[in-house]
Length: 385
Image (cartoon, rainbow, N blue to C red):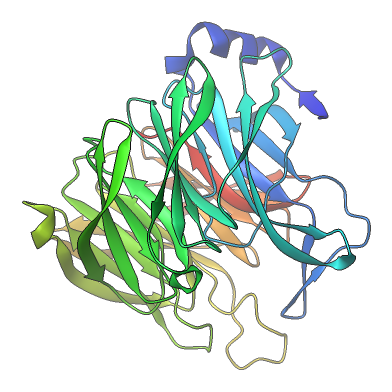
């Protein structure tokens, strides 16, 4: 694996005092290109990469770049860090077809990058179910869950001493269920799994390393996809991406108060075409949504528009519109810094990250910094907080 190490002194300092860093990782898909609304595979593309930034710096400072397989297919929650910011975990939903390099086929790997290695490197490549997509780590950094989009399952991994080990698989449903993203509650006792194939969110129970499917499913909007949970565990926000036909799509707020049998959607709000990514601020006051807004459609489409990121306050268990900013084309993930006053958004076509300042009320302002990447930003992730 090729590794590029930048700002080496900063990374060595990170190894000594990891709690002081604010790392963000971008999964960069170098294969996929968007040509007039159609996804094509580049001829002889360079390797996919993971780029890591220190978001405590102004401007954010790149500290490492490592080759690892990634994929834009699936929700932009396919990358995360462990709470100690030692490991980056990233899934690859697709790979180039060995028999036909103009198309992709489902992959089944999870890469583990150790940022304390010298230089940072992929230290494990683990098998998942077919088509791994979203990934989540619990707050204690002992368990990782991977949603396998082409298998209808969730893979369970133990995290110990800087390495992962497969310890189980949870059957959610047939492959058509479309298991997409997963989020773990702050207390580590439950997880929510989106099923965009049949429009449900499934509740899982967690007892140590034993993860089981409960009978509780929650109905949200059309094709629930990305999902995030508030730091206090009282609610979750899910992005309903719809069918991509030009309709205005929605996000839903799920109350997580009380027994899981009573968890339910309490508010749904229209946000625009294809809310691809969704994330919750560390203080639990804001939700940010990347809205494709038709930016991924053909130039002559009546539904084509500029990519957007929108923020919403959560007040009295309702979404309240707060801010809006222009982003790039076919934009995917978003992530807040630890203070919740800065935000990054990843762009596939421009192969870049936009940076915004975030006011206390959720208003957004571009800071004029565009961070270049070696591939399209397919997902953004940080440590659970």
